[in-house]
Length: 344
Ligand SMILES: Cc1cc2nc3c(=O)[nH]c(=O)nc-3n(C[C@H](O)[C@H](O)[C@H](O)COP(=O)(O)OP(=O)(O)OC[C@H]3O[C@@H](n4cnc5c(N)ncnc54)[C@H](O)[C@@H]3O)c2cc1C
Image (tube, rainbow, N blue to C red; front, side, top):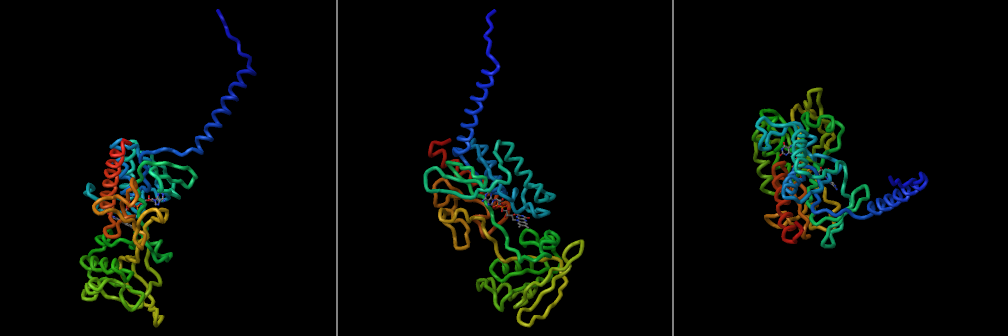
């Protein structure tokens, strides 16, 4: 028999050299950008729906959830208007279902990772995570959503989902037959006050100034509605409640400093939303409030291969089902774009 004897010290040296080679290349790899076909930014209904469609079209989507995995519905209890759940569903449960469906088709989900910077100047789009990783993508689907503005009161946080809501269309139904209030004086506040007046016997509307900022037609709808009482020059001092939830509100007249307490069940805030689109500033067309502008009837932005979906591009509907719908559209638009380029 012919044995080949390798001394131990030579074996170790060989291992070390290979280890050095491996680490050297690993570090280089770390510095090199990842190449991806389709990157999805955001994990609300729009992001996960885009992922389901993109993965089933073999686009190997890589999704970054950001700091709010699951998006806005993670902070709500019952969702009763998303089709397919006849008994309603808890927001976090629904988002877990959507995530599992995206994972089933091999979406790579990067939990907690933010996209911090983008460069859409070339044919291949560049993105950077908050961990410093650089990604090059043939297509990008934006699903970064929007955040409702709140007043910033401690009691607002305390009674969130226990009477406090920033979405009358979503939560108004839970207060039908009960007295409620809405804070705000713009178009959204007027629209939501009118919506609530169809469900509730009385809607108190607290307006900081002595006029409404809303369009003439929206103002008329509010001012001619017997069920809506507008409290001018009025600000919220405190939301009142107990273990069960909201029981009332204390307001202050900013002209007279007089404080008044009103008993009610539902507290709605309608002082605007902020779309999460700051990182796209300078690259993508947006309106003056920061909502991304898409080409009519599609999810195409002004940059080829970059598509926008969900609340980040929708200031009118802002619902889970419309976000999911545009997430689907974005994946189909991206698929057609990549196929035309010969990438897939
Ligand atoms: C209290 C409340 C109750 C609601 N109830 C209902 C309801 O009953 N029915 C209904 O249809 N709708 C409801 N809505 C509205 C619904 O939640 C939204 O319309 C929907 O979630 C929008 O989905 P989206 O996918 O566009 O974004 P979002 O759900 O807003 O998710 C945005 C995602 O983007 C991520 N993100 C943001 N920036 C970055 C970044 N730079 N990098 C990586 N990720 C990023 C976030 O982490 C998040 O995951 C409710 C909203 C609220 C606030």
